[in-house]
Image (tube, rainbow, N blue to C red):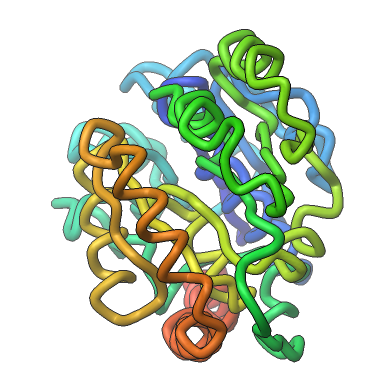
Length: 317
């Protein structure tokens, strides 16, 4: 008996990052029998991106996870990878009730009872092959910022994207502003109203673009959250203005800013228009952006997924 059950949380509250990471793992573990279980609320586009369509489960309640454990063991799977915002000992125990080994991927540094606990961060981020490949793609930063990306994760439950549109409306007309709305975007109607009211042709909206890695590699700078997206941008060599919606995002945003990958603007309340515009002015310096690009790729080298996949192959054997 061998193989992995990959269980992930995905909804408009926690975002789609956990589901995307799970898909990236499945793509890497081609020699391992994998079965994915994703919570209700996962967008169809993400479900369809798996090479084998995942099973949808209602939630990550103890009873649900016990049922997952029974199903996984009936398929001969040996271990489970639980990827959620918060993994609790009760959740681990529920999966272990079926005889599975458990790997916990979450913001928790250590989950009691888990056979392995990992906090997703710069050194072990599970990036897609398309994103990882950007680490080796040459980047050159010349002149002031002419192409800016606004990418507040796949969900943006705080409405930061719409607020940034309002902040930048009518300003920096010579800068193309690519606005990305991810597959689980929570407040699209609000964003649409902000873009309509702006009447600013420098904004270009992309809804769940399939060529996001290419877009990341072409912009001069990005405004983003301290989430998985910031690690993808670091790997792409894209300088950032970093914000946060939650405590774990604040920790990562501050860490990346301290290392030199970007400039920290704070929460939506702290990131005033003056602060955002001042940060963009600083990023007009191509030498600064080039330095941030080099640091970003030294911090996120795109090989974290390979290291984790090697450990999971041993656990599932």
